[in-house]
Length: 428
Ligand code: CMC
Image (tube, helix red, strand yellow):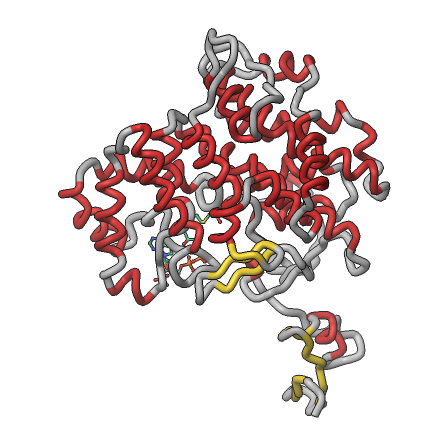
């Protein structure tokens, strides 16, 4: 028997067979269900796309019930253990792990594109001294489109590749400049002898030394955090990237929008919110009182819960391990004990257990970033750097998909029916 869904319309008595493939029905197949010839046809109503597949994608797979995250089929735990960020970015973009030569070429291309145009510096100098680095970051990424008008040639493979090199290579430089701007220090140029993460630390933290030597443990920890954040299928910012990209604008403009989506406290801003929350709680003794407030609906336990994961976020498990390595170098973050106590109590509490609320990627990442010397405002920027690989991969996949059309959802109109204009002197 064919895989179909049988629908009977009780308004008309008509029966319909709607094909099911890949566990989905096509919303457009419902259009044929009409009560009258002038009926528009049946639509689905799905605010926030809770149950709507917006695309086909071969990049990232998540099983939220089992806590599985795969990039191109490879488990995130194995990539975090064995790979590095640039190799993972290659995998996400091209679908396979690179050969030795491919990796060398890829790394050299990225390394050769890390410099920013000098006018970018001038552009960034226009921001207030206390401007949020994420605001600087997303505006500057958007401004890149004016530096690279060739980026409009989105259906040219070579041009697309060039923008991808530029974006992956330049986002750490923009991020570091945004940070240096916020602390009033001169910008550091990239050092191409260093690794991707090592160079980023150099651009952030180098002072007067001739050659910056990144701490290998911290550079590796940052690199693993980059791997964990590189993609996460159709989340808010990635959907934004695809939606903006569907209008066929250049990828810099699309990425500025994706970064803006990431800025919010429910998405990439969550680890900043976690630290604020931990500071607010202040001590381990006050944790039960805080949990009580959350259960009473007075705020959320930030860093907990996920739209997709209904078990422990696999990225959070890896991050918890890295935290120990980082704290061995930097000293323990004093907020860690509060976080551990929050997790301990929440995981035993019915409220969190029945709602399947577990720590997500952001619960511990902020503690690590803070211990490494990053101010909280930099946290969403640190998320945006690696997520750039995912955004550009998803953008290109969307562009090359023959089913892509400009994103344009429908609505259920709830406003007034048509009425005549009322002259000003006749309004009560
Ligand atoms: N603390 C307390 N209660 C929560 C939380 C939380 N963190 N998250 C969800 N709930 C409750 C929610 O109030 C609801 O309760 P009820 O059924 O009684 O109304 C229930 O759990 C289901 O939640 P929901 O709002 O339907 O879940 P969602 O899928 O819409 O939201 C979320 C997912 C991540 C936005 C949400 O869990 C949240 O706001 N978490 C805190 C912010 C956070 O850590 N965000 C980072 C997400 S991971 C990084 C990323 O991928 O961007």
